[in-house]
Amino acid sequence: MTDYQKETKEVQAEDAILDDAEVNAGGDEAKPTYEQLLLTLQDAQAKADEHWNQLLFTKAEMENTRRRIEREADNARKYALEKFVNELLPVKDGLDLGFAAAGEPGADLAQVREGLALTMNMMGIALEKFGVKEINPQGEKFNPERHQAMSMQIVPNAAPNTVVAVYQKGYTLNDRLVRPAMVVVAGPGSGVQAGTEPPATSPFDEMA
Image (cartoon, rainbow, N blue to C red; front, side, top):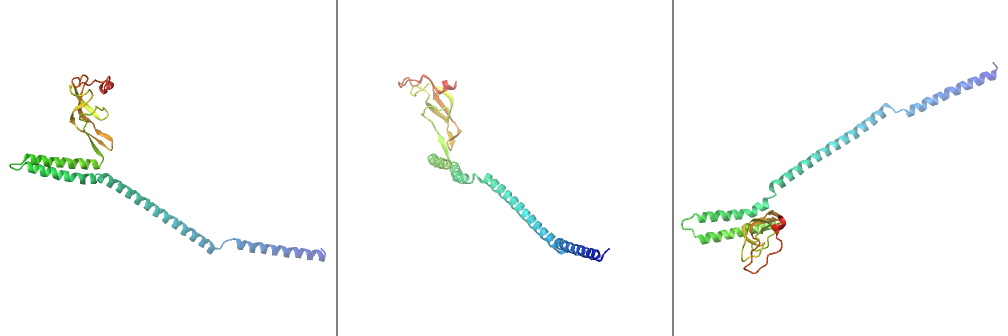
């Protein structure tokens, strides 16, 4: 081997050593240290704890909201009639006073009757405040949607299909029928002496 060949080989060996050193130096810089890994882990743990606490807080809020809604719904169901009851209490007081007055020795029937009339008027006002209306079809044309016929009679001075008597008044709640009025209706042949003509058909004919 010549001197030139020896020098070339030595130079190549030195270059290889330098390249290995550079590679090793670069690898140490890319690899995270123990402290860096520990900080990264602590940061991830802190975020996980924060999210977990948020989840627990949200879950507690949802549970509180559910309980509050249930409590409000329960109160609404229990006390929905509170205002209605307050309107009826004076009526109950009036009935109590009237009953006590009627039981006294020498009670004046006219006064008891007058007090009863006032109490009934208070009852009607209380019902109207809550959308309850009375159906008293005396003398009106029979309406099968609001009246229930108990019987039919021939009445000389009433037109056929006219309500001639009300056994029991009916009631509506906000225009919805709660109870029909129990009535007596003038049947076919009625009104002859009054000079009225019976109609060709009647609600009863249609119902039959």
